[in-house]
View (cartoon, rainbow, N blue to C red):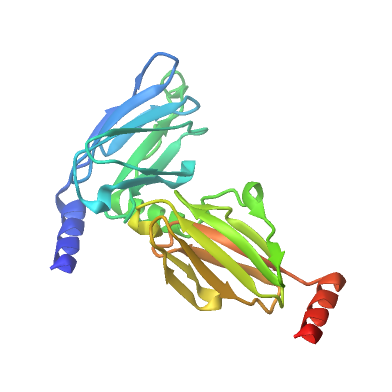
Length: 266
């Protein structure tokens, strides 16, 4: 029955729904503001703003469906939980004209933010083209395979305890840190602390090490493996919306000596 329901939702989206557009209103402080009702989708689902000016979207969630409990705007690195019957505000600034997609956490419902060039009216330039439904899907599919995080700003080296490289990763609107640097040939222990109820982040996948593990809410889940080869390995949530990188570097001389000493002691 669940599968039939999801198919019906997609058919409704593609064949029957008619996205409604609304232009943002500039509030005090120069912020462009729009309220989006979250109820069986997004209304309006097409929002027109001016590029180069800050935008505030106020999401009023009225639908209890878990599918709509989170909103994602990959281009602006936004993943916000939407509590039921509350208004949740997100802010960003589109630097250039174009179309930007937002969606629910399960990518079942989608909308579009159209950023227009501020000089369009005076120059007579053509307005940016809005996305068709097929282009919306293609755009979301592309974003799902992009890293929507700043790895360099969130890089962490492990602490070493009895030869085990240990790191704690907080799971809340993504992974913190999301770029880990470890040494090859030494065991790694990753401790995932899940702080969000989002179903999107209820599982972590590390394909290169055969890991597919459920993460219990407000608990630490420990995963262990030993990387043998130098290189980068991706970890992600179960829906591949949030990602991180495990960078495996070659062990240096001191690391090799330490491992040899431990082998002798054992």
